[in-house]
Amino acid sequence: MHGHTAAHKTYPLGTVLLVTNPKNNKSLRVRINDRGPFWNDRGLDLSMGAAEYLETKEKGVEKVVIQIISVPKIAQSFISISLKEPLIPSYNVGYTATSYITLKENKLKVPIEIGTFLKKIQAKMYLKKLKKYFPKAYILESNYNYKVKFMMKSNEKYVQKKLKLLKKIGLISGYGVCWSYE
Image 1: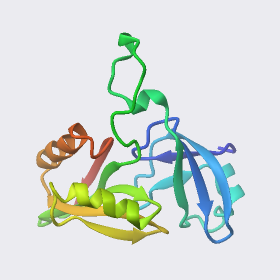
Image 2 (image 1 turned 180 degrees about the vertical axis):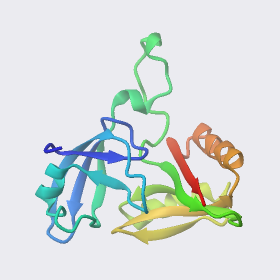
Image 3 (image 1 turned 45 degrees about the vertical axis):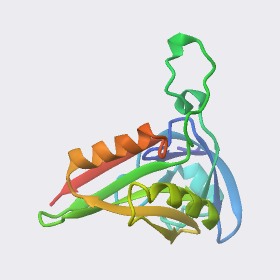
Image 4 (image 1 turned 180 degrees about the horizontal axis):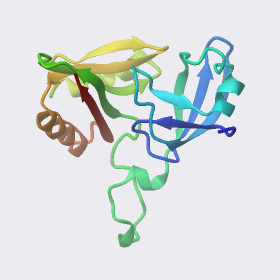
């Protein structure tokens, strides 16, 4: 609780992030050691110690800039540990697809978000590759960074099948789909 840790929905546990509060330019390295947050559109849940240091605790919710510093080697590979071969990343670790929403009965499409890019040029390069599979994908500027978004039909099996395909071809490293229903 008092350490410099955080919770994230999809980053591998042990991932180290550089979190910056753009209002005061304070930065802090935090380690992902938990899952969450699972409410609203929040992407990161800082420990109390990290929030105090970054001066975000009093407000409770604040926009921050996130940069991946390191990811545990085991999370960077699909190679079995028992093979005792070097673990070489087979994809870009930073690109995860997420969809966390509350669905109403008549909701036909759901938003999917991929990645958090610090520079628009990076998002554009990724978008170009993704448009092969999702021609209507677009870039959204949010919280001082860029995300690639697109819509899919609101069918869990269909969404998981498509996201598994993106993972298989290396466009994403993982995905998280958490829908609640009204």
